[in-house]
Image 1 (cartoon, rainbow, N blue to C red):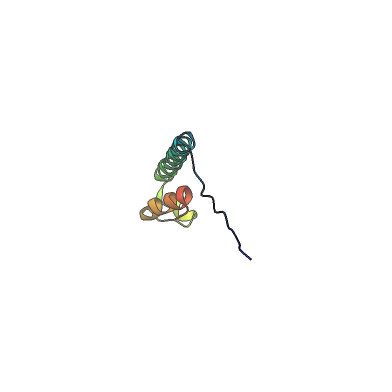
Image 2: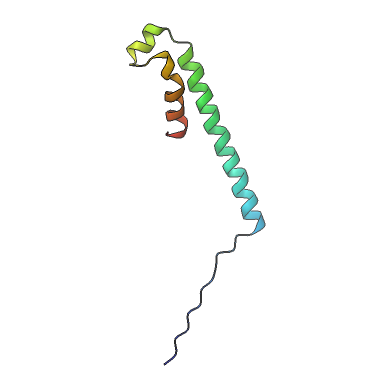
Amino acid sequence: MAYSTVTRGVHIGLADRIAAFFTALRDSRQRYRMYRQTVLELSVLSDRELHDLGLHRSSIDAVALEAAYGK
């Protein structure tokens, strides 16, 4: 007895790839805006206010990266 298997690849059209590119670009810009906004908001706080939050001024960048990118 003979068996036949048909495997079809997923072909993404040009329009889908362009849409995915612009979606990724938009998401990237939104994440960067969140990062910048977080840095700006934490930078205006005094050292005492940062200490109340359990942060040091040198950790502002790391906190902003975590907030925007989850890293």
